Length: 411
Image (cartoon, rainbow, N blue to C red):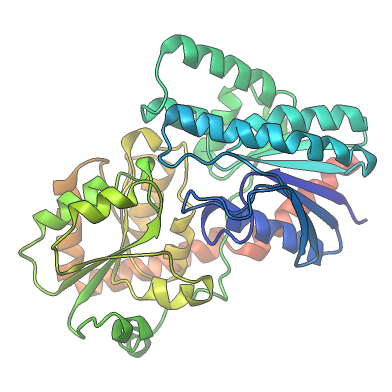
């Protein structure tokens, strides 16, 4: 039976990376299965942190009705300004959200970050009655990350925030997260285990596939960027903000200055990009690029000989980087900084090499090892592809979501 599903979250199309990408794929997939889907979201602003068309408006995208609600976007996000940014969307979207009472959705799926939106979603559920169920999908434990990365400080403030978070989480009929470690954290925060669901992020295994040796050598990006045939490409692609710890890559680049035939490609947008450009100025083998078009993602990810995935120590198990799945699907090895035993660390040990966070010497040593050993790169890249095929295919994950939604509705 077709469900009426309302998706409520900060990020949506045309965001090319991160949470918005997964939200739009989820909504359009459900719509394609015959469900009636509506979305309440913000105007596009990420990853540039600059809103476009920042006003109330409605549009239809791929069969999904989308309501845009304005928000405040800080020029240089910090702990406080980021919270104000999230709160501004929660407030501006509340009237649009509560107006959905007349539609009476079967399920309201709230996507966090934007935990400030959770109380409004619960209020809508109560106004609609028992027929409407509330689901919270946690892509990022934003409050934990803000404190553990130093964007917010103070034990009193943290205690108040955690109590509010705990009481809010208990109000949802289902709470899902994208990794096993994050699921355990949700349970520790008070979510009943029978209401907790693992819903991994996914990747389109047909859209991103490993290129053979000839395709890799003839990758169109090599000609466009003037990359020599004998050069190895070390690639970072994604958001550029504090939790990525991109300053580590600058140190690694300096440490590996004597290694010949390396090209460093660092592509993305975000508040840390300006500092990254300044700190790599004058380095001939470093290119800072914008995010690449989604339709060229397969060529872009396959351009790498090795993918780079730095991460701050405080972000371990609070986020599982969404870019990781594309990296795995491309069949290229990754060097990732994450503690042993963390979700990212366990994946990196199978699909590449894991190093401790904020250890530039260790990161450089891992890269030297991969740069010098083509057979090792090939073996680890094949393991990466095998891993993503086993766990993270789009059809399998979204079919699981649909089954859980129908089970929840029938209960």
